[in-house]
Image (tube, rainbow, N blue to C red):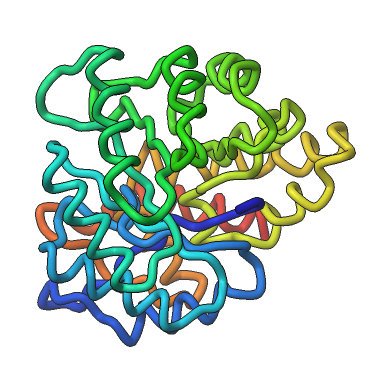
Length: 283
């Protein structure tokens, strides 16, 4: 996989149920501007989905697109991650995005053993997923370099936002290993360093400028100029206001985002005002 993939929001209706019609509509709306889809990622509110809902969401996305589907399947333990990865494969996923095990603390040796065992037992390629802001655990570049030697570990989503870590990781893997950044704010820099693209929450809302950065990756000066206006909006719909902010921004642009699931709340007046102003700037 190369390019831009949105970690798809999961639309919920006012009662909190998954709105599969809105989900497939969203896939259709984004299809021309992205390269692959990522259901059941962090932005998808996957920790708030039941195992059955996760499988159904992945199946709905796979049925709605011919593009590759990289499905989030990570859980706190190996057995559950294996089951969810097998279920994702049965639902039509092409590969699995597996977050570092969370809740308990794990050292790098334990993490490497976990990923090797998982990748050996499942039938679809495994992509590592490092998002320490949510899990408290970061995959070190050295660990990624070791895991990249496994024949069924295909890549990494690096959501640290750490450009240095991305470069150090790229220095430890070969060209077949795919590194995707998880922050739209550093997409241009990462591409210039050799990244394969990004799995970007902002791609739910504004995929064309992100895809344009990928298309112009051989012109770093141009892509840095294209990337800069997106930084504040990206921060607003991720770090500052999170999923409620992203879904509000999407609804304001006529996209079928639905609503966030409890315990997420609705965005407040101040947040709406700030996002409205940022949307005006990129438009």
